[in-house]
Length: 483
Image (cartoon, rainbow, N blue to C red; front, side):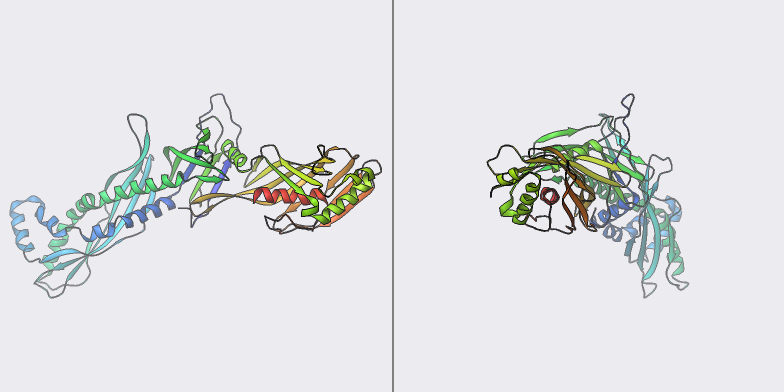
């Protein structure tokens, strides 16, 4: 369903009013007329609806009640029909379906235009007499609630659209054949609507039921969140204007398939947007998205031996620390390491038309791999643009433009110093940044560097483009954690 379309996944944000608030589902899938039309058209093709039209028993239908059941006229008509060898549909097409709100406003009317040509074979003429038949089947999609309170979509009131039937000849005939052709066309006018109802309507109903089952199967397809997954379940349907809305429950499952968190209807606000030109949309409550992001980005710890991974950075770090404290610099050994930790749950920040994930990253520098206390600890406020999209029939989440606007000193055992940053970002269109490391007591600049750091691969852990530990490892962590 999602392949040729752009998915709009909107996380609605409104303040929840607990007193007297309406209970909202965890998610709502809205399906516009385009989706309904295309999916139902495909199902009609899969159910061989055109073959059903080509097999309509036209001759037997007009012979059943000729002349409206009047005996005298019936005998006359039967004598005329004896001149027919066969009468059948030689070609049939289903034209583009139309979906629109029903007259009572409680459902959707589906109109299915039919275009057929019937061949009439009679010994009165050497060629086949062709009769053009145009009509339209229509049915109503609405919500049906069972005695137990379970609601589901059904299609009913299937019939021939009033005033849609037109029967005409495709070629001129001789005066001998004209009476026969006119009689046949007159008999097809009442017979064809009945054939549509008895032969085609059951196929339309079966096609709709299979369409609904396929959509629900797609809804239940799990969304991968690392080793966990998010899964939606169908709760109930609703029809709003020309849109079908499927209210969905949600749950988080671990790698074993066990439910770790269940989301039901609650007072948390959910605003379902107007589809406009979008074929469909999936609107997810923010508490569900927050839980999904937290599952996708669990607390992690990254430990790196500088001399082995980034030897040039290790040398520059020692030189910089020596300017702050020569005693501390002398303690740096060949096994000096950096620990990077993500301890807090990421925060999802939503604005109109955009989403951003923010998280605090803690960076600790140790003199050796045996040291218990870090030289200093930096706090890095990192953020990334969150983008939802589809890949095949799967919903995907991607992080773009990973950046950090603040790096601050949390504690230090080597003396106080300031870390300031004008711009730190990674991604397409990144710009050079200026980073400053200064002594607090003298305001002497120890290191001032412009560093582009653009376009590194997500798995990189061995680059030497940076001149500042915090900058490099902040970017390394973001890439390693989100790749």
